Image (tube, rainbow, N blue to C red; front, top):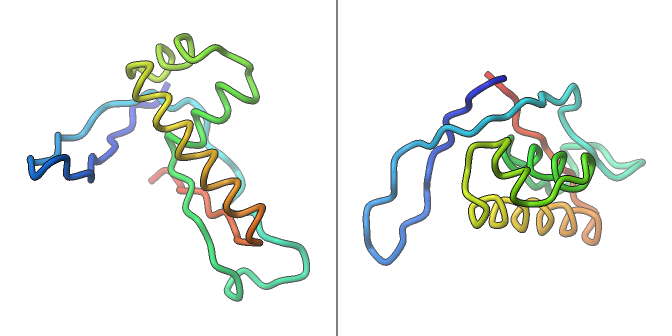
Amino acid sequence: MVLEDVDKEEDVGGKMPRGKCHRNIKFNSNVDYFKPAGVRLKETESVLLQKDELEAIRLKDFESLDQDSAAEKMAISQPTFHRILLSARKKISDALINGKSIVIEKNI
């Protein structure tokens, strides 16, 4: 099990953002990106899929876990899991509908 530090970058109502959260991310993709066929990667717009977004997609859509179970596996609250999942799905749908590449954040 790998614990990842994820920065909170949102500024909510002029308040300082919260510090880093630990999220359990077990999956490390061997794939760096997906792109439309027949187009060079550098010729497409791209969306960046964060590690926690990929893990949320994997747990909910691939492993078919309910949100409570998936959130527990990632050591986050269910509402946070839901927000991460919505963000991932929006990025993936944007890429599919608009012909963008999906770049997957890599573990360091």
